[in-house]
Amino acid sequence: MAEQQGPAGHEADGHPLIAVEEDEAVGDLQYQGFRDGAYHRPNDEEELNRLDLMDEMFFHINKGELHLAPISDSGLRVLDIGFGTGTWAIAMGDAYPQAEIIGVDISASAPEWVPPNTRFEIADVEDDWTFRAPFDYIHCRYMAGAIRNWPQLMRRTFENLKPGAWAEFADLDIDYYSQDGTLTENDALSRWIKIAAQGMEDLGRSLRPGKRLEGWMRDAGFVNVNVVRTPVPVGTWPRDKRLKRIGLLNFIQLHEGLTGLNVRLFCDFLGWSRQDLDVLLMQVRSDFRNPSIHSIYDM
Image 1 (spheres, one colour):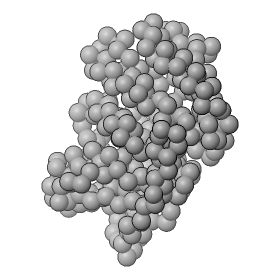
Image 2: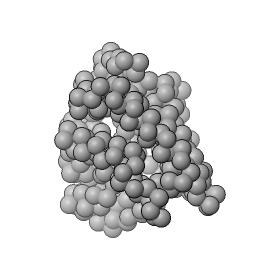
Image 3: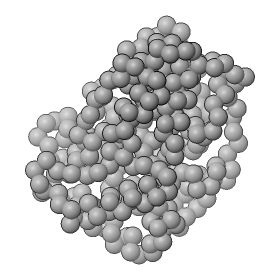
Image 4: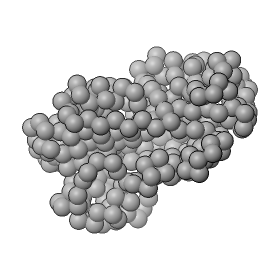
């Protein structure tokens, strides 16, 4: 997270609600239709359930806190970039009833009922921003693979904050490793993520933005940048109760969502057959289930 002490953001006439096109089916998976190909994850029920698991995992990673930035409820204006299923924005609306919460996402998946101070808009945050007023707090997490131009996103975030306001980014560095040597480069998990990460890089999107967030924020003009790095386990092998819970949630969301996260990348962009992909992912799931492999990635 970072405190901005630069000039206030620009005022504009408001942020339009962009129409959503029909969704596209790829095999037995459903992908959003807004700006075809801009979003590699599915937006079907299975994916929405996975995003809810990710929200719960972040909740435990942050030890029950909705945010780490020192914000207050007094006239708070909040932007949530990439709201997913809306869980975080709704929780913020409930926790800060005097605040105005705006969620923006390229994929339409917000619930019908939301607090009166919370609203969701369908838009691409990589397009020009036209918000009517700057924000007190901008929140963005789990956008790995979704953003083409991170430096531009950081600059727009900076420009749309009030002086002294805060931005908080949380994201992955998806290179799996183990602290005890139980995960090797020959394991299917290591082979899969190497191919996936390079494939996304070739498409101009990174699965490893986490370790670069600090530099991008400083380059955009942020000051007082505080960095918290958290090793995130996969599976229930950690002894620590909190990490064990995080590992369980991580295992479930990866094990269940693995196909949806990879079909478009491997089959549409990298030219793999669905059969070859299914074989690889079967091996990856086997590694996830193996209690002797203590896999971790950083956030």
